[in-house]
Image 1 (spheres, rainbow, N blue to C red):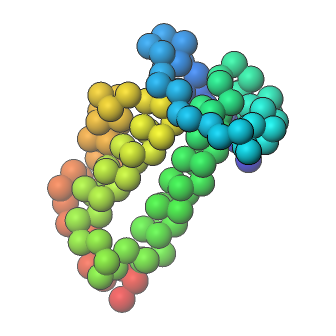
Image 2 (cartoon, rainbow, N blue to C red):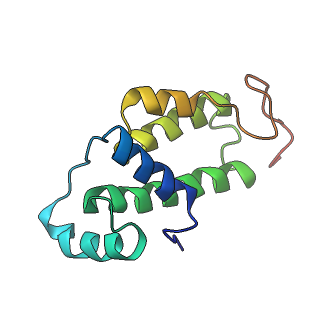
Length: 125
């Protein structure tokens, strides 16, 4: 569960929103009540569309990591570092980070593997 005082994702978005101004993702009317509740629970100082986008991005990031850990990308995605960087960059844009921020975040190598190193082809076989 996301908690506003301890989650680095909410803290990073909050800081970027305060200091640099984030692009605010669109929010449909059908989601407004739920978005307001989510915002009150995890990030009352962010716009509801940003807080809602953070929850969606967190779930998608969890899914990307789970697919990698459990070998679901085997024989589907060959260069997982490039794919992961692209996917995370897109998630950053979805939470309102501008492309220059998203690009910087997506260029960082993943822990446990040097940038550009091949994936372990034995995982999941």
